[in-house]
Length: 452
Image (tube, rainbow, N blue to C red; front, side):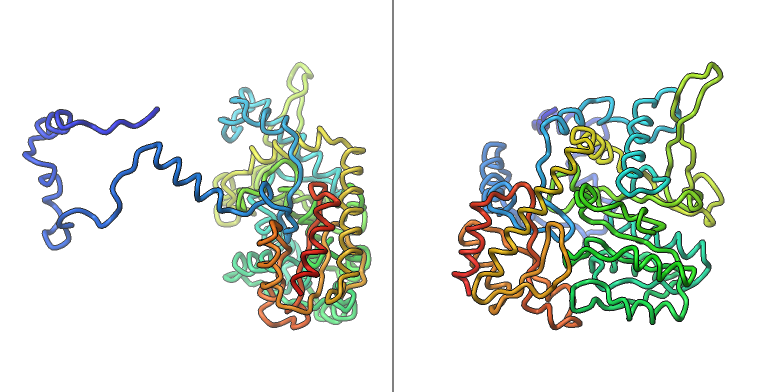
């Protein structure tokens, strides 16, 4: 419904009804010295037509995936979203539904969450998943607290190749808890340094956290990290910020990870200037009761009919107050549904084909950029659809030059590592997905060469 301001007669009638002579009488309880004298120094009200025109002009100044050749990743990826996803997502029974406390009237919502959980378990090759989390960073923080509760140990070892923003979220979540975060470096090949990890584990730890593909795009040796952690009775937490990679790589659960967390934005969720996004978490069955949030399960009624219920809800509102495993207020139901629809449309073979296309295009882009004078690929580890390019010039200047040519370049890594990794000062993280054409990749290489 549109809003129509009241006319003078309407205002007069309302003031008469409350016994006021003027609108200023409504503010007599506020001391005189705190009242605004005269009009605020703001522009005059604009018409709806004028507002649309102005906001449209601002929108056209944005450089995004819909307007430019787009090579920016770093935890949020430009993937195709089939038209069926938003169409089904906007159905009123899904779009307006709330927490399914009453299973009798919430079977559709509960089943959708159950299917989402099943898909996450298939992707990660683990036993149980919850109903979703706010985003990948908070999912990692929750996983760290799971490990801390299980082991009662204070130390958590995190690879420096884990997304820096995820590490910041972990520090924020645990700053007032008895949790110590120790960061181990990545090696010359771009993967977590195994010697540094082994040395850190000598002191004991609740968990080891690695990301694969890691923040530098490199595919980690999750099996080796898991074996090292298990030898010291520590859990292994694997982060996946680009879940499309699981269409090509083994699920971390099959490689020894005890908990897998990550970001589900790649499946049916648009970039949207950074959110809202979708966090997922999956774990081994032995950790089920330590998982945060909700878990939907399948049940049978008295007549043997299949149904769905909230099997586990570990938030503080339900059990044990401050001793609960979670204070998560809700799951990302709508975005989890988007991911479910997207994955259902793709199917196993479709996801594999999508992953292969991502990798092949990224490999082509890497070969083109490696041939550019003034560029080199500093890391030798295999990658999926992201890789690091080191340039002779200033990465910021390179990206500004690309933008003038209609290209959104990669992520300059120097500022995210705060000088701790000087070798990344001239590094740019390039992401390539199925949305990038061969012509765009060639144009990127030519533009980078022209900017150096």
